[in-house]
Image 1 (cartoon, rainbow, N blue to C red):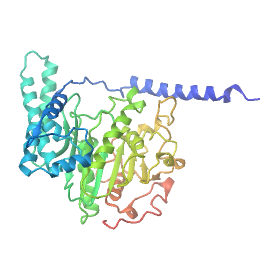
Image 2 (cartoon, rainbow, N blue to C red; image 1 turned 135 degrees about the horizontal axis):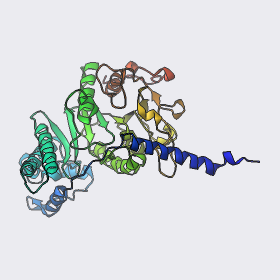
Image 3 (cartoon, helix red, strand yellow; image 1 turned 90 degrees about the horizontal axis):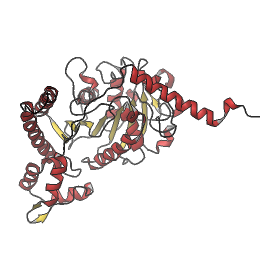
Length: 403
């Protein structure tokens, strides 16, 4: 006779209750952050103008045209015509997968300048509350920083909480490309930080990884992208426990990867909720994605690495002091993200995170977590330090010929 305690229904309800209790704890202990979103329709207006536009007497292609067709369209234009479109429709051209990288950089610099002008007016708008003017000042400061001469943005949208993707290195000539996919509470105002925790924000993560890759293999031309170009959950709430935003972000990530220039292999470095997105995207990403590395992951919406249906090597790490270890690794009715990627049974290559401190310390210089990410990014797999629980994490993986 089957006991009541072992019934599948009771087990499922207990699992659901465990998740609910955890998220109540998160909400009542200050881990849930509430932010006010700023609405905006500048991108929608730009798309409407683009749809009516033309060049040399010919209508412009639909903004949703596949990247390879957009690449062909831009290839038929003169440099002056490409510059004209970037200047006239910056919020469109700057985000077009298929447009040349340098054209997107130009367009996004123009779009950031326009967004700065908007916030400059809002700072002095007496119709806004004091907090509204303070927010405008914060955004203005952020945009001024983004306009520094040595910065290059592959995506930019100031609408709502805002989206952006910044590039470090020469993307057109790179022999290896790394993408940093961040987690919750990522927006234009949290894109970068000043002070002691700069490497906990997407731009800091990418800069730190780029420097570490160059140090690990100076002869390999690398490029690193801080990819904050998807809508992330706000705080550790219900959106963070579900996969809806990860599914939408996965579509955007796939589109970007397919539009990257050249044949360089791509490595993804996915932190926290970003690892959920990478797990969802894994089975559709092109073959040029050779590595998916996750850190501080709540799960990849899979019971094991095989369920990701990817040819990419899957790497995982977690610092011993990372609070994400306390979140139950299960999925029930869409709530939760599945098995723990650092569990041996998951099947990922578990690497050392020695030196990392807490949930946001994986990209700190001097840590084995960053050194391991850099080794993966440049294809120097023999240099990867395995976690004690998986001393053979780099067995059967040979150094890339470019490393």
